[in-house]
Image (cartoon, rainbow, N blue to C red; front, side, top):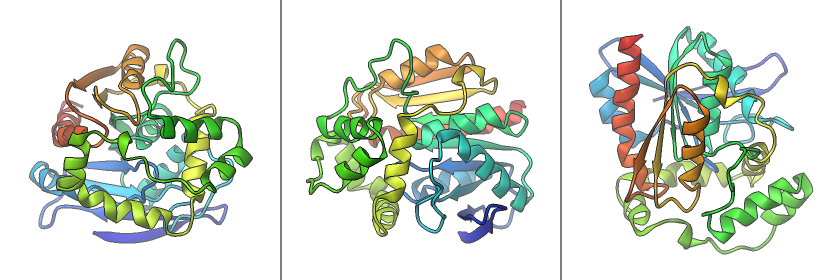
Length: 283
C-alpha cells in the first residue's frame, strides 16, 4: 500500500492511502471512509476479497487525524470536496464509496454531492442525521457513547471538556460477538485507532461535532444505489439509524443482521463489496 500527501489550495494537507491488486488493472475503485477515532487506512481484512473482485482501495485521514491538517468547523459534507481532489490527483473519474460507523455519513455525503462521479455507496453501522425527524437519536446507545455525543451537541467547549475527563473505556459498548472479532479478524482496528489518538482527541472532537450539527446535504436527494448494513444488536450506533435512512433515502436498501453488533457486522463487508461490484457492472 502506498501513502501520499496532497496539498490543497487553502494550504491544508490530505494524507491518503492507495492499495490495488498487483499485475492487473483494477475494475473498480472504492473510497474507504473511516470511523471515529481511526486513521484512513483501508481495511486489510477486506484485501483478499478486493483482490478477487479487482477492486482498488483509496482511503484518507479526515482533517485532524494522522497526516491530514485540521479543518476548523468542518461538517460532514466537506469530505466530498476532499475526496474529489484526491480522485483528481490520481486520475480517477468514477468510484464507489464505503464507510463504517462515523464513516457512513461521509460516504453518503460523497454520493449526495458528487452524483456524476460516485457509482454507489455503502454505509455499515452508520449514523443518521442528528435532526432526523421521528428518530430517537440516542435511544439504544450505551450511556458512555450517548454522553460523548450529548457533550458535542452542547458545543465545542463542552465537547473539549468532556474529552478531558479521566474516563475508563466502556467495554459494554461492544457485544460478545464484537469482542470476538476484535480479538480475531478485526484486530486490525488496533492499527488505525492508536495512531488516530496519538496526537490527542482533535480529530475525534471535530468528528463528533460534525455528526450533531447540520450535515450539509439531504440524504433524500441521493439518486445512486445505496446499501445500508447494520447489526440489530449494535450498542454504538443503534440499528434504528439505518432503518431511518432506509425510509428516507429513496435509492437505499437495508441489510439488517440480527445477531451482529458494531464490529461483527463487518463480516458482511465482503458481501457489500460484491454488491458494489455489481452496481459498477450494471452501470
